[in-house]
Structures are given as structure tokens and as C-alpha cells.
Length: 260
Image 1 (tube, rainbow, N blue to C red):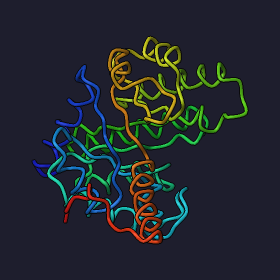
Image 2 (cartoon, rainbow, N blue to C red):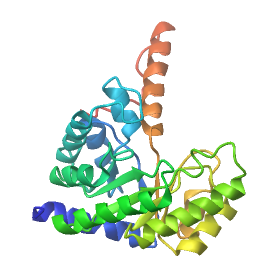
Image 3 (cartoon, rainbow, N blue to C red):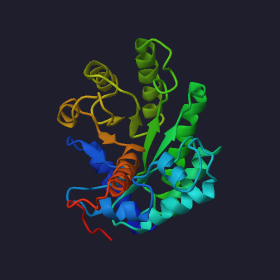
Image 4 (cartoon, rainbow, N blue to C red):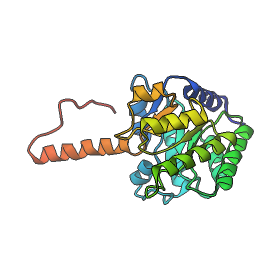
């Protein structure tokens, strides 16, 4: 059984998703980014970004990083904060349920698992197995079951992607997932259709340019917004801008904070 601290953090994370207030999580990729984000007032949970962790360690995204390395970094993130941590575990590295079991063992209390548009019955069965593992481990695990209907359907009619996302998400919810992640530039009408089909506080989204405002997403009963690799891109942009300023003969900006 899971230790009491992990179990308590899992319960907290689940309640944050169920609350009518929109949960926002700015994704992190290592211990120092976890500490910096955790220290910002109002931060209630952390999410890792698989793309960002892989890039940090020199790997391309898409399960190219060895699972042991991914989990090692995730474990360092968990150890760097007192907040609940949900991890991006891509497609589950060949065995989603066992990967989640290992993640729970290092203190992770939620996870994104991609369906990668596997046959629906197979993808739903993976969700069911993950939730069975969570029950065995004694945690209210927040599986953020991801459907790639839009992500892998860029050449299709958006209406078809929407219908498939709704169908797959409903199957994942029926299999026990608390929430479903639809990474896409969803407009207000699409968000409304998904929430109407699944119910409030079930949809999670990515906060990319072009989606409705956070305030509007809260009004529409979206559960959570995360930022994937964009938070790392923002940090790396600031680093490049520093280099450019140094090359122009300048230096660090006056707005710099001493964070470590």
C-alpha cells in the first residue's frame, strides 16, 4: 500500500479537479523548475512535461527517453515539492498500468497517458487496468486519460475529430478515468460540446494561444489547463534573449530574480 503522504496528495489532487474553480498547472521538467513554480503563491499542484524532460536529457519526445531516466527525473521533481505531482508518461512505455504502478511508488499521484489512437477497446482497457492498479495501491489516482483524436487528426474534418474525441473520452470515463485530456486548439463551441457530453469538471485542456481565456474555461466547467512544453520554451526564450542582450553589450535584465 502507498504511504499516507502520497495517498493524501492524491486526494488533494482529485479534489482540485472536482472543484468548480479551474485548476491551472504550469509544467515543470526538473527539480529547480519544480521548486521555482511551487514557490509561486497560488500554485496548488505540479505537472511534468515529458517533452521537456526528454529535451533536458538530450532525447527526442515520443518515448525515446528510457523509462528509468524519465522516472528518475519525475522522482526528483516529487522530492523537490510538497505539492501533488501529476506526470506526463506519454503512452505508458509499452505497459501503461505497470508504468503507473512504478510512478505511484515514487510519489506520483496523477498521470497523462496517451491513447495514441489505439483501437478504442484496447485504449479503454488500458484505462481500466491503470485504475485497478491505483485501487490496489490505495490511491485516488488522477488519470488524465489523453485522446489524440485532434492531435493525430490534423488532416481530418474537425467535426469528425470532435465526435471521435467525445466518443473516446466517454469510454475512458466509463473505464474509471476521473478526467480526459484533449490537447488541441479547441474553440468555445467545441469545449461546450465536450462538457455537455461528459459533464462538468471532466475535460482538461492545454493553454495554447487561440483557446478561450482561463476565466471563460472556468465558466464552461473545464477541470484543468496545463501548458506542456511551453513553460520550458518560455524559460529558454528568456535565456536566448539574455545571450542576445549580452552580445549587444548589455547584461542581465533588472527584473531578474534570485531564485536559487
